[in-house]
Structure formats: structure tokens, C-alpha cells
Length: 123
Image (cartoon, rainbow, N blue to C red; front, side):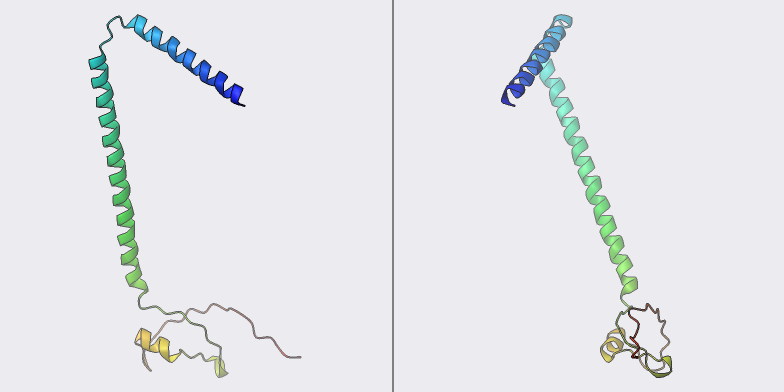
């Protein structure tokens, strides 16, 4: 495995040297200052793009967070609890839930029924 790694590294170095020498042959004038300027400009652009992307991501996350907060206001008046069906199909809302929801006798409420478990019949 190590030998394979060394061979691949050697091939990569050889390919780099070929590409670099071809570049040098085509560009008789190699100006290190100009090359450094180009490299700095490209690095600055990459950093600016990175910061823009990070800023946009943060903005999107914060917008989703605040939207979720606005949606939660719709659920403040809701309550969920378990109860059993009484005589004549009646259900009762426990006192703690009535107090939390600020509902009193005679108030109109909407009930969503989700059966959880059937009562086992005795034989």
C-alpha cells in the first residue's frame, strides 16, 4: 500500500512538472509579481463568495426560525390530553387543561378525536 502511494505521488509530481514546463515554454515571460497579483485577486474573490454564501445561509436560517416562531403562536390556544369516553359518549376535559386553555362551562370548543386504544371486552 505504501509503495502504491509513493508511485502515485511520483506520477503526480511528474505530471505537474510536465504541465509547468509546458506553461513556461508557452509563456516566455514569467512575472512572479503579476502571478502573485492574479493569485491574490482570485483568493479575494473566493473569500468574498464564501462570506456571501455564509451570510445568505445565516439569513435563510434566521428567516425559517422566525417563521416557525410566528407559526407557534397559532398553536398556543391548543391542548392535547388523553381521556376516556364516559356514559352517553361524553368526554371530560381535565381541570388543569381547562385552566391552561382558559375555557369555561358553555365555551364552544372544537374536538379532534384520534382513537388510541379499544377497550378490551370481558368474556
